[in-house]
Image (cartoon, rainbow, N blue to C red; front, top):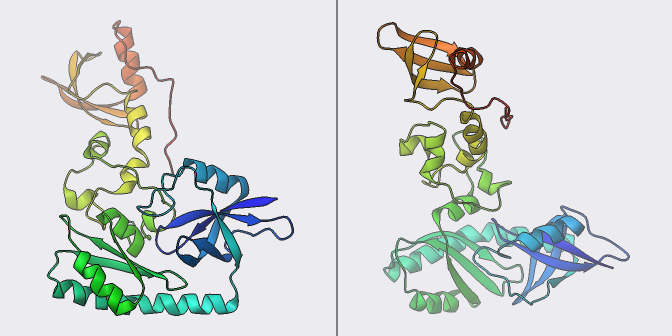
Length: 298
């Protein structure tokens, strides 16, 4: 009986592999040596069995920027990683910063407008992947030949966006915790300014941007709550007939369920949403239905 495994490598890179689990199934967090396109690599298992198969079926890529071949079967897990394998892996990872500095020197020598974000050795050193960001397209053919001569291995330069760069390098967000994209948020979905507008947040870029310089991923977490909850309130700027007379909706407080109203002669007042609904209905009008009260994510 074969077992499907999700294996993660450095940064956000991942892949799906097959293991013969009839005698000795592999568990989550175990380190394994897997078969890759040009040799062998080492990663840690993050999902097994049905969960891995489900994630594999909904995944859009097997690695950052690498589209999976449609009919290609998953490659094999060769074996569990030994103590020596893990030692080699640690040595390789500790050498990658020195490699990055050497790559940066060569980039400057070739006068290329690109920022080298990270480098990653394949476990068997048959391939060196260099991740970089750039505002424009870069002709790095001469650089690749130079680096191949320097490191004596296959060189792959991979351009990534600033959000992918933040996910690979990690950091601490304004919430005081490690970036979501570096920990549990593995699929980066689009985030636009409309999410901040719907939540009535400040549109100052410095207030709603993450370490990558793009809009915070967490703007999307509670968006559905805000949109659904606001449907129970009258729209801001609308004029209502109440017990006081014609009043204009100045603002709404969706957490305390209050509405801020203003009368041209009697000034402003704050009223509970339920009380406002009663006043409006007594005069023959109505407010949005109070049926759905969504729970806020915590």
